[in-house]
Image 1 (cartoon, rainbow, N blue to C red):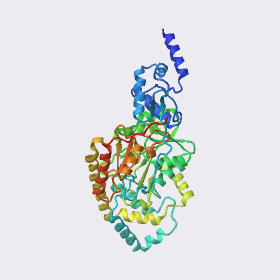
Image 2: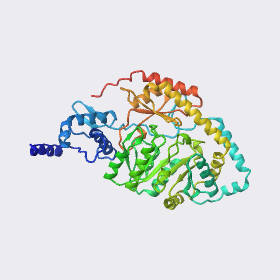
Image 3: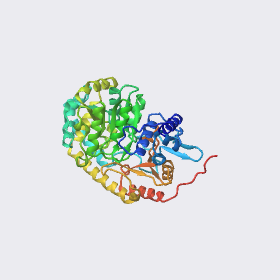
Length: 478
């Protein structure tokens, strides 16, 4: 009997075009199967359109029940990884070739309510405070003279001291020699990857992540691995399995609130990821651009593992995106490589921008602006819950966006199009998907572009009405 069962299993294994491993798993078998499927899609092992083994065949090959495979396939379909069609079997879902590209400038029509961009709330205070910072700086001749001179790659030490002191008051203790200036957060992403990771090597992130990181990894010829997620973001057990399969040099994380899903990492999750990083000698790149209040912030990765962790700061969400001013905290051992890359790129970020940004950021006026913005964002997020609460949008109280999973039978591309017809611009999940990871049926709603709450509430109400409608049916092609 045993030999017969072994023969059936070996025969089934030989016929399976996809054969995952269930060894050393710490999650239910069906969940492990879905995680392996997601990982294989992300790294290209499975391509869009590839057919998965029939359920009975895969069950025989793995020595599990058909019910386990059925549950795994259903979960994979729910997550948008696969689609099942009568007569065609279960196949890896195709990515739409016309998926919208991510953009940092508004593509909304003039008469549309733009909820697509994560930007500071428009307010005349910004222009007024910038004018004040420039005027104050101009009254200090030595500061202007210094700002017009060449600086070291790491940035003017006086301005680095200003920023380090300010970050320390925000609950992010920094030393001046740990910091180097960048031309915004996106530049910091690119700088780290270019300086520390070689072409062809692998980096990882949550399966849904910041499109700027996706673009930087692609531009530099890096292998970008999607790590399965849960309601706290990157799953340590899934990351561990991926690290056992291949060398991953760096993990990119947004622990306070993931962009786009709004996931927040608790203390245990952060410690678990540090443990994985130490076991596999992996760097941790923490994106802190989506800045939050000290009261809502968890312990930063660079505080948990200072020798492995880099931290990105930017004024883009606090003051103004057009400043293009950011900073990178890095371990001392990595500073020379980062400085060498900066020198090759641009000699050094412009000190005049650093002088203006630090003058503004450390002023009492900036404190009042940021307090107002955080209070206003919290109120707007509350309005999201009041208007769309039946659909359980996810968001951080300080977050600029909310993540809305669409109810059946809505598809994200259809919803985005219909929302535009109703005068509201939103963005689907496609630009946030790593590799060939299929996009879930969800949209990101940014609460900050409207200058006033009334405009935001009008946009949210239109979306709520749309969600109650049936999507337009399109006849299948024959």
